[in-house]
Amino acid sequence: MTTHLMPTYARQSVTFERGEGAWLWDVNGVRYLDALSGVAVCNLGHAHPAVHRAICEQSAKLLHTSNHYGIALQTQLADQLAELSGMDNMFFCNSGTEANEAAIKLARKYGHQQGIAKPVVLTMDKSFHGRTMGALSATGNSKIKQDFAPLLEGFVQVAYDDIDAIGAAIEADKNIVAILVEPVQGEGGVNIPTPDYLNRIRALCDRHNLLMMLDEIQTGVGRTGKFLAYQHNDILPDVCTMAKALGNGVPIGACLAKGKAAEVLSAGNHGSTFGGNPLACSAALAVLASLEDGRLIADVERKGQQICAEIGEKIAGNPHVVNIRHLGLMIGIELDRPCGELVGQALAKGLLINVTADNTIRLLPPLLIDDSQIVMLTEILSELIQEYTR
Figure 1 (spheres, rainbow, N blue to C red):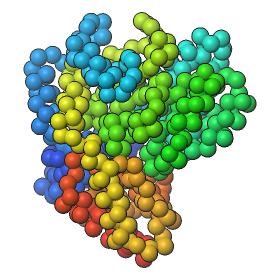
Figure 2: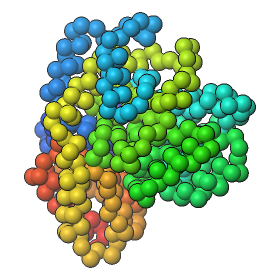
Figure 3: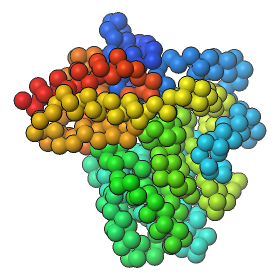
Figure 4: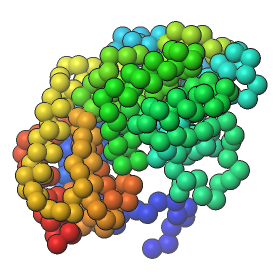
């Protein structure tokens, strides 16, 4: 088929026409169970009534005015996010990579204020922070960096979940001004660190006057069983970035700041044409209200445990399954071999999954997935894994 689209995606051979909750229907009327949520975007599922209503009502009023003027819904959203996160203020943009760009700029200006001419941000191996040049430079994945040199200077990577490596890097480079880390590495293979990892990073940042910056693009908005994943550790970062599920499909991102980090950027330092416009903020406010009203986050951990337990039971004894790990509904099933073929095989069975880090099946189902859908998911996937590794 002839197309005028750039070939930047290895697309599956399906086109979806509509959705409802955890279900999607293609143009031929075939139904699929979505266990990917648009890569952790549609936490409330598809065609959520509250989000639909908010978008429709707001589109009849006002879509956009620019940030040269006050935006009441943006102020309301900032107030609610501050209450939910414990952070002080925030900058709104359109995506996760833009939120991370804002965090990187904030870190560099913070470094300059400390008298450091060439500030360095410490990031982690196997990390993913986005595809713009700053976020790409921060990312610890050489494969997606290939062909895009020269990348930006000012970043250094160490192994994930290795607090000693972080300490050694700080001692070796006095230009480090911030640590940017994902509470769980999603693209890197659903890598979950030791429970006190973030607490120990917080302590190092306090000791060395560094900014602790958490990339919660994928882990945020209830995905791990807390509104933000750092709340499992009862800490507050200096900077936190969000996007993906915040708008349930309507593009919106945010860079949240606390304390000294909240005082770094000033008028003219940063901006966004579309960031935080009335339409996007109306969708985000509907998402936050729906999460609270439906108590969806409170049930996330149980559902994650149920999925992992049922898959574990069905594939018990399979020597080719290295590990099944999860935090809430962020689930990784690691095999001892590349398993990208399973994406197409699952699609043929009516199930949407993802494979990341070459050998890890990633599940990111909507938070509202129910018990019958969990049974369907685990039965199809377990059968596919058994057949694939036979």
